[in-house]
Length: 245
Image (tube, rainbow, N blue to C red; front, side, top):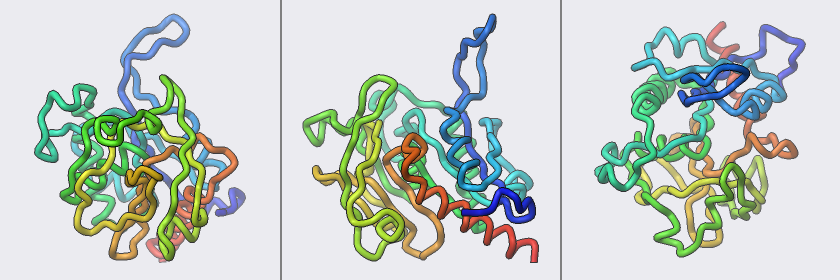
């Protein structure tokens, strides 16, 4: 873990936010929001979290401020981006899609270490040319991945030997899931590195060995296991030092 006492080595980690109608105190207004668990996860790992609201197509200047990126969870990816129909996913956010697909492209071009969570994993697969299952229960015949409203389900996943996820978390992991979509056709450039018992893809990594890890589960809600985010922050600290040099 990166030492919090060393300001020079503390990397800046970008966290895309949602824009949602939000009630607090006397207000009920559209707000840029993100569950605080993401902020706590990055902070505890020694990173500096920076919230990135969707504000149109991002610029290289923004990416140059970052040392790493966590693509956060949230609403469905617009199915029109992978050849689907709009009726398959009514719960989409075009502002996030526009911002985060651009952010991912720029981050990859800059060599940023990237951890993609739930929606983030799905975004990565679509950005690489893959497709998604619009509603996973229709394929697997159950809703065990979906969790309760506002909650998560405990899912056991098996990792692929030799993968980054396996090295960090071991051969079998109990994870917290809340998703009704999943990868359908895996994109070229990605490797499957974890699956659930029903065959659902639960983690992917970049074939080229760069730090690009996508997980279908939510590591931010598991305070007992911070191995993935620690690895991201350490990779981001290395990226920061090498860029400074």
